[in-house]
Length: 144
Image (cartoon, rainbow, N blue to C red):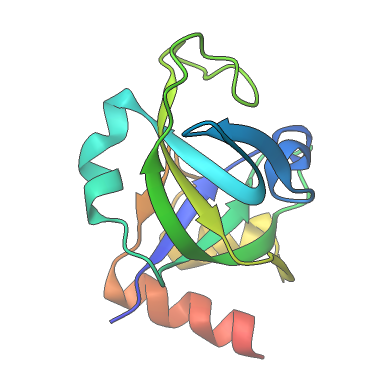
C-alpha cells in the first residue's frame, strides 16, 4: 500500500527543491531533480519511506499557504553533505543526509483548518507517515 507522508515546509524552503528542481552533484555526476531530505535524526522514517509513497508539503503556520504540493517518491539516496547547506539549514543544525527525489509535484489545496480537522492538532514538527484513518481523510480532500 502507498503511504502518505506529511512534510512541514515553508514556501521559502519549498522554493529550493519542490517548486523548482534542485541542482546537485552525486557520485561525480550533476543532476537536477525535485527532491527533499530527512536529517540524520530521522533515519527510522527514511528507512520506512518507500519509492511510490506520496509526500504532501506545506504548513499549518498562520503565515503559510496551507498544504500546497504533493509528489510521489521516485528514488532514495544518502546525500553526503556534512556542512548542512542543502538547500537550507535544518532547524536542528543536523545535516540533511537522507534524500529522496520526487516526480514533478502537483498543486493541491488543503487549508490549515482542514488539516487541523483531519489530524486533530495544529501540525507536525517533522516528516511524518500518517495513519490509515488520516490517509483516507486526506485522500478524500485531494481527490475531490
